[in-house]
Length: 317
Image (cartoon, rainbow, N blue to C red; front, side, top):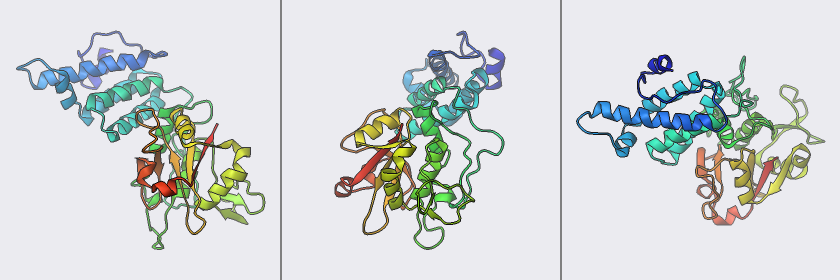
């Protein structure tokens, strides 16, 4: 234990026994204790003239502290890469939600301990997210049925870096083009619940690239039609907004669709909410490409109340 802590510059900060394999409900508490010790000792070293307080710990909880903590997690626990991915994802989500620094890192520790072994990151050629929107992704992080969880779902979404990834860049072809449908295709594919980009022109059954001769490329409006007519045969069903948030918070893929009869529609992922709850005033929490790029926002930042009444929600269970 001390040898491994020394690698991260954390030697001597805790005397608590450490399990190298983790255990149900154990590793989150363990690393929460380790986190507290790391932060308080860090504060003590930097301001040795007075005892550290919780405020000191929050003030000194830098990104470097978080990195050191998460590296220790990776080395010490059998959750391995999947645990690190979910912990980092939790850290990012908590930061976006403006949680205090210590709470952010505590959430990361807890998420690491909850990471199911089945949610391993892919190897080999995985991690391919092409710039060209018509090409399918081969994501590094997946969450198939049986390995569901809010942290896993969040990790799947975050790997696509929707706000900065050139794959979803607005107007990249100079035609006012946007890519909400591509982002939903990517995320649902990684979740083992593909809402396809390519479908057979007659049957509307999914087609796989590069076998796309005679296939249709689905727009957001077409995805809405597909979810209503063909989606149920592929595990999708319509739900209320509150139900969509509940399922997303449980790690199930969920989408929100606005079909626009007079123009371009819109489709988004419903993502886990930072506080694990549904806010009826702000609506579901979403991640989306499109004219506005959000990795995390409430749906009311996108739609007016009038338009929101025409949004449909679907979940894959």
